[in-house]
Length: 241
Image (cartoon, rainbow, N blue to C red; front, side, top):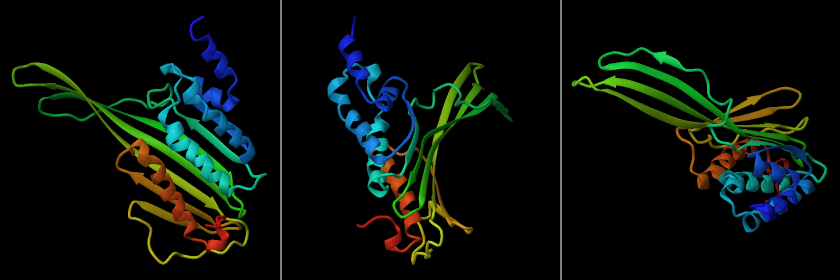
């Protein structure tokens, strides 16, 4: 059988690694020690799997693996890190919304619009300082199909698309945790809200005018998350450096 040895190698991967390879999705909640086993398994992928259909999506190594590394450093050994990643891309079933016709005029005979929502990453981590961090990243792609007739009566169809991204981060503080407004405002593209209660919740939202390139995606997420830690004294942030 073709690729028998590769299939056998995939069967020896960590179960979460297998799902990423075969299904392009993963949903799991484990302690840092178990995630270390997942990362160790993922590190063997490139040397083991050659076939294109079983290559890991680029966001696995560019975003998912580094985020798990960072959160594992700030999570207690018995704290849970939950990850739900859907790396099938915006063309996967169920992500496309309904189509609608927009008003047209002139030589445009028909203008059809629809949106694709791709919530491809959700993370929840119980940090050492008692706070809970949640991250959600969603790509939103607007599609427009235009039917136009030129001056010579020739019919033409054209499709346009525009992709933007929304990053939502929430940090629910431990009870009685101190909150301190930072001396400088966040970047203009990030909005921070504070919700009072028994446990103060800090929310940071960023709406990016485009989907970042793979090498910029991680930095965009971490920049949004970092805003939540500027609202507490350093000793309460969970980091020592």
